[in-house]
Image (cartoon, rainbow, N blue to C red; front, side, top):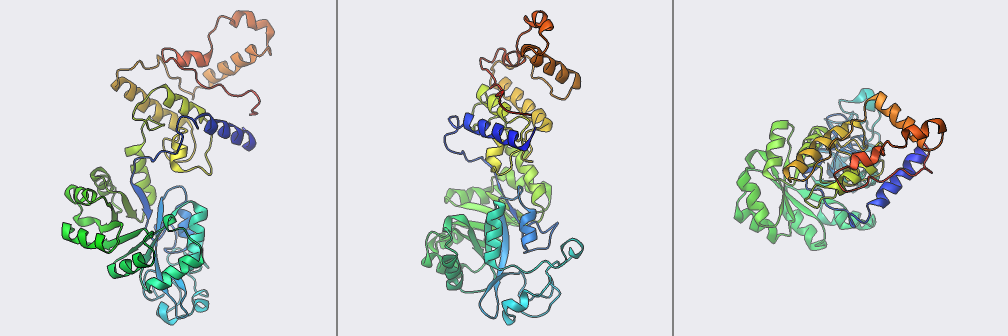
Length: 396
């Protein structure tokens, strides 16, 4: 199928179900937060690490220091020694000096010459990559950050700010109460700590995961706050925290976390109305065989992307079929007599032959085939719904 044809089919699929989900529903999930970008496969705190998280991470976290001439740049440490080929404190170097450094870190084979980005450059790249910035303030005044955000004309709802310095967060809240502020911390998390954070205008908590239990998650949620955790790379612990109901997990390996989130939360209820029925099947079928570039995770999921790779292919079919049949049986609804497996070449060939015959390509065979019911109608048998037919004007 040509790219243009795919685009037309995708447009039809999206338009077809615009009335089913009038506004994009929020997919119940845990936010995938890439630590210093996708730092397991690209140099930390670089544009390359942000790009590496495209289609995987919901947020990308990075650290910010201030140069000698007052510019905000991405760097975790107070010096450039560990992650670049230079030496010295960030605060003692100008932006021009820092821009001469190579930040390829331990990935210099593939990323030689990777520069240290400014915060503005990182925000720009995250926007292009469809990822929400999660900005950790390491150094610098609230006024410096606020002035930068204002100069960039940023909507405060489009990024998050986190810091271990809770007084800094309080100052940011005073400058603009619409900032989405998260308190970094570790150890015991008590009600008195939460009360103090709320009094300073903190919106969510970002805590070291080691002390986080079900009761801690419940406590934070009882205060109408989100609980995010850092930094988790073990899949077993990731799943435990997902099961606890944390709102976000920061990790060096966002692909691993993303797959766990997908397997936990993606069901056959594509329109997210809590019921699995023919509408969900039709939504899945509308996206069958398509790729979904430019769509969000939720939008792609609602068109049948069950494994998070932004397409609807045979692996998605197998997963959707399994979940669909399990769900309709659980709901004691009539399940389809047979959901066809699309991988058999012989079946595909027969299907193509039937279509050709029905469109007068082989008129001599039409009388013999006239009694054969429609493939798509058979698929819908006992479900009371017709699968949307492919538009004949769409090329292949």
